[in-house]
Image (cartoon, rainbow, N blue to C red; front, side, top):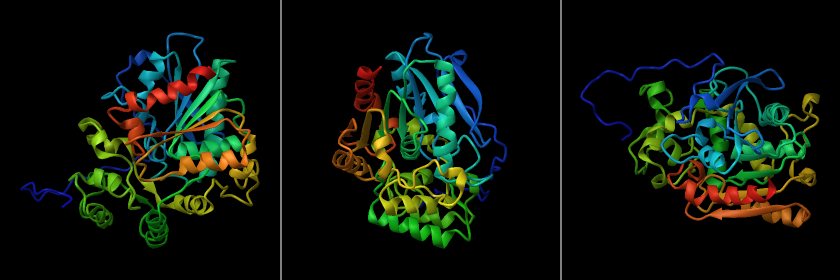
Length: 378
């Protein structure tokens, strides 16, 4: 059952899909005067979101935080837990948060012009880095990146578009994506079978209504689910229908669990061909092979890994139900192919994928590894 009987026949109210590029407000418990929302566009003119959290001191190293696809900068600012921004501020850093075009604070996953991860690597991340550097001068700039934010960052780095970073923390996946066999198969089938009917998979059934073309997807996700919440089912039990799991359920607070439909948005199906090509290659590959606008991106990021000019920490939960042991694989491959690179791997026991940032105990179990890595490099 994905819904409990309520004693009323009234259908859920349908909410309008956003068509403007105005960003949904961030939720946080910081002093509003410390949070600077910066008008920002990518190199191709697409409106994005860039946020600076004022540390109160002018000489602090800066840390750019990159969310995963369909998530947003909100994942680093959870007001219900001690979050990564809190930890960075207390340890002497100035956080910057980018909402790139895959953010659920923006409407591009549901409406607007379609994009590939080439656009994120070529336009979004380099423009954000350039803007931050123009503000901070010669202070060190670090990056902490999650999931697809990390994957696209690896393409930017191997293209030489963001040189001179002080250090990079990559969570979940970096240069060598690896999905479980059933996840890869379902991703391929979904792309072929559903592309003529839908262009994205929602996570909030209240938004699309019970009697919609998406209902079978929610019903499928509810099979053998231990949680009655439809949003949790399609994320924790199915990962947008792929059969993967995005987090360890018991690591989320009740408040975070209830906010899942806000923290993670619809997954666009039209991105699947690029993601599928990346997964089959077991590395980050460029989608646009003939468009000269993307010629600065390497056809194969792993082949260009020698251009990485900064220390990299590869993080992953031991129970990562989406990317499996991609980070360990990346460390082993780079140690063999590019032994001169400064790349380390840390596995977080008992953690999944998203709960490395959203989990109630992440400040104790995960963030210390990030600070230990950044500290000697600042």
